[in-house]
Length: 390
Image (cartoon, rainbow, N blue to C red):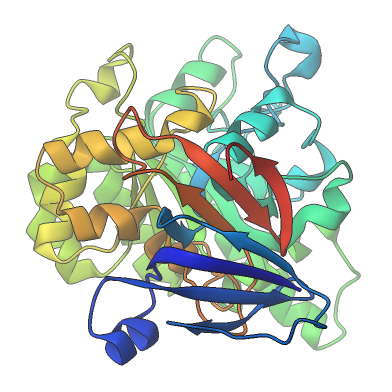
């Protein structure tokens, strides 16, 4: 067992907050077999108990941070083309591709994530294809990706706008227009739906390509839509509504221009990366104010670094800059914990500190959104994977 004492706990749990009537309370956390066993102002254990006790010295104890959209380990740092497995740029529709077959957990970015208090990340293919393949939510410490998987598949990547257009321009094949992107996606969804219906009746053979769509149509995972511009956002919504599918709006760079309409639609947004240059036409309106405007309108918001577009360890800084530009402090904390967990479909396991959830915990000597704050400890599945000064 592991006991954290004298902790300033920001649980991000409505249950815990309701019990103690405050966002942060002084208390203890007991961890056993990788799970949170108890959260309480005081936890007394007999001297004979087999338990490591750590005095947190009133540092801030939070759920481990969550990156809701990135390419860590699939676009590796320091390895150039040899380590870049992000985009299969030879066919625009590749739903059967699985992120877990390309994520290298030995990528240096994983260690950077752990040092930043980031304990989970939603990782998958890039946006060069209309359909890119399946994402996976993984823990950030360990050598074998199979042991790190929290949820697979976690989403099906689709992309609108500039990236598919640019990738296939000059190849004498579709798509080269936004019309073609939408048309190809619709055609794929029609074919997938037809296959699933026929397969259930025993009228066709197993097909790996279309079988990858099963969890999408069963609403176990969402479409993960790469959308920056307003028109692309609305096209993604139009198609999701046509087929009755769940979806996340990833990047949503011009979402602040249509915040009220997006709130009515009900799809969550993963905003960013904003800590980068406006190096493409479709990101000309990128701004840190977007997350706050969307959240204030009622959209569920997470924030992304889109690593390696901006570095994974900058996640809390990106959230802090969003807070500086209008996101509330509470929504800032939610954007990298409970909101991210809910959007990624793993809120039953991570995102808050409460009994029964995975013991994924980050300890800071201040607010992690502030640049001078240090990570003092990172715990994943109840194991201390990073320690500095505690």
